[in-house]
Image 1 (cartoon, rainbow, N blue to C red):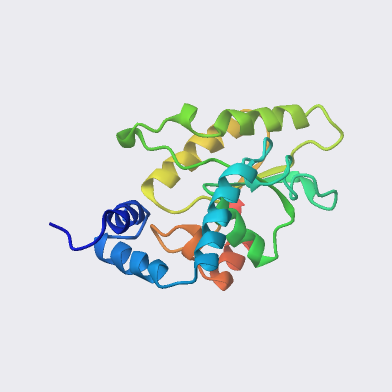
Image 2: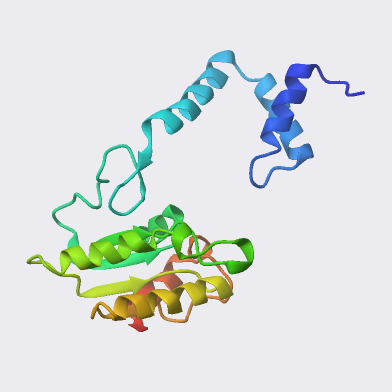
Amino acid sequence: MSKHPPQIIELIDRLARLPGLGPKSATRLALYFLNRDIEEVRSLATALVAVKTEIGFCSVCHNYTQHDPCPICSDPKRDKTKICVVETPTDLLAIESSGLYHGLYHILGGVLSPLNGIGPGDLNISDLLARVNEASSTELPIEEIVLATGSSQEAESTCVYLSKKIKDLNVPVTRLARGLPLGVDLEYVDGGTLKQALEFRRQA
């Protein structure tokens, strides 16, 4: 039988479901909250609820946003002839921090992974192709699609699939230079390496 009251057991159980937190870490965190001021804990709870009730996804690029379209998509200073395709919003932030890219983005929401049941219909691929098609009939057609996914086997397969689909639309496709470490997600790549990968991107 646990020595903790049921309220603490419930909190530990919920915290242990978070990524990267096991039972021991969840227990330490639960006891940490127990010893904090009530206002601090209430502020955290309010922030968590606000994220779920006030934050959604951009209908254009699928990034997290409070306003639709997101600030990047609605920024008139961005180069609307380029779209950088990334796996997650975290990857978008990594590229933005490099300061080298000033175009638009498109977030796939993951990579193709047949073994895990993730196919083209489970990602934001059809929306990307629709964006390219719609832009082709405007004064600012898409001139380059930058595939900026990670270097895992699934990411490589996703790039091959996207490259073929986009080239069928007669739009140039480039990929980040292969200075990126194999099997590493963009969010873990240092700024200097990411800058080189952007500067020396190649034809896909």
